[in-house]
Length: 378
Image 1 (tube, rainbow, N blue to C red):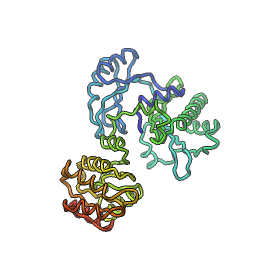
Image 2 (spheres, helix red, strand yellow):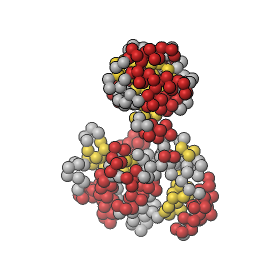
Image 3 (tube, helix red, strand yellow):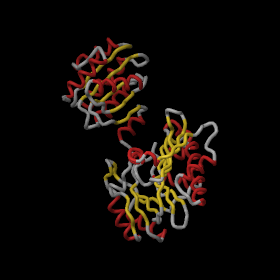
Image 4 (cartoon, rainbow, N blue to C red):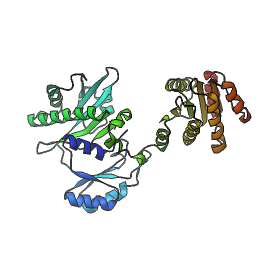
């Protein structure tokens, strides 16, 4: 789960990490009032769950309240990488002397949190890694021992030379690591962490992603979820207890079991296609899940064929077939649908589907090839 910048800053502020003053607005008039209250120049920042807001025109400087109102009017409703801006963060503008980067992620290879810092803040960290990797310094933290103060200071020295700023930065890194653990974060990031003419160190941007599996422990953070900022298909899938991730391909996949879903996607790629999604209906035999899965996959305009691959163990093939029939009656798919049902009650499933004359296949390879062929992909 992602939270907006203004929400991440609230969590940072509660943890003692210094952030600029500000508030969120949903209308130009609210942006005007916030700027009046701050009584100083502000930044008006689009709140969407994507990067590149500044390059898209979603981050602007306003000298006064009237300018903030005008800018908020322009930014609200703006489309940034397919997401509509419905909120803006109005935050005090700060004079910047230098910009740095601090981020923490979980490294799967070492099974440890890794803290990354760079003096090249304000840029995409991927670009820094590609062009000037020597500017990125990493520390793998033993999760049993935790982050030590001397380690945080060593990292801070990579960013600043002034001792007072080093101490402030080390304290920020310690608190950021504490947040990473306490909220079950998968990523926490400050880009940029800036220094001011007065020697202060501030987090003027904030990014925080939460592991969805840990949300039951954080009801306050779960309440921050902004459904308007998420893919409607992913929201619907989550409500139906389906595992769904949208991809950029054109072969829609409906499968039971995560391992089989990954294998199906691999074979689609192997035979020259591009999977449009990962969708696991799980071990349930509920036909309603199949109906919802079809609705979700059909909502993707890029899908040119649908591949349904079911291996019936706990899942009963006949129940899945009933779901497919219901989906055809309700949605009448305009794209080809290829079905592979094998396992529990597969004969009954094929009987149920026989009247619809759907393309079927006995093997997974055959089903994948048929779906790609019927999609018209060259």
